[in-house]
Length: 268
Image (cartoon, rainbow, N blue to C red; front, side, top):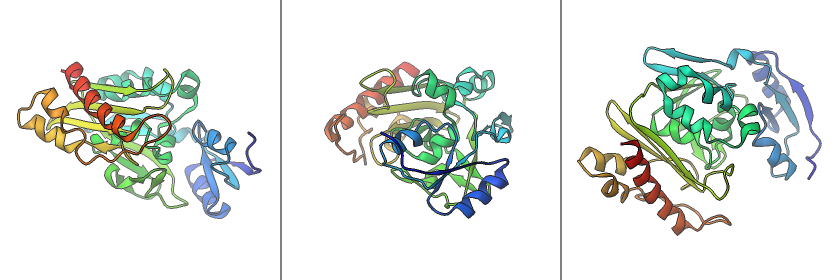
């Protein structure tokens, strides 16, 4: 299908992008890689009146380790995260997750900031952000990931606020990210990430609710000495996935438990 008519402009700086968002009105949207927004526009599920292109903001394209943290600029492409030796040294799970995003074209164009702002329940990076207590940095404030993702396609961003950076803690221990999908480049029907950190295992689940979920019950079971199979039995605690054309709620619950067990076993 063909998108509805829209205006277009390019931002020359973060300040300019924010100013344009404010002046263009509530029906304007930022566009970076466009790998999520453009398909929705073609289906007319999204009909922004104006697009503000932020692809020229090179100031938001960086990967910087600092004081036990890994700072990733919002305009960093998925492919860059896959190839980055800095990411592999400081948070290899991020590189692993990036390699699972879409196909080569999507990875070449899509950005980590775009995925965060889009807040799709099937997105992979929000799961990592939640399970690792990452911080989303905007042009005006720092937002803990647990407060940033509010519902499907809904965040705590103001209409004229721009995601600038994702601040992750460094973690180099055992890790794994698994996702079940019908075809190689599809979105996850369900995904599970596990990471051994200084305070024990961190576990996150993708697409088992309106947002990604941190599996606190699984983490607690592991701290108490449970083996992967026993801990994975708690993966469905508090989950309320919906049914759709790809999977029923019951099947998603089954996948959450199975993938949690497998991820823990493979990481260990």
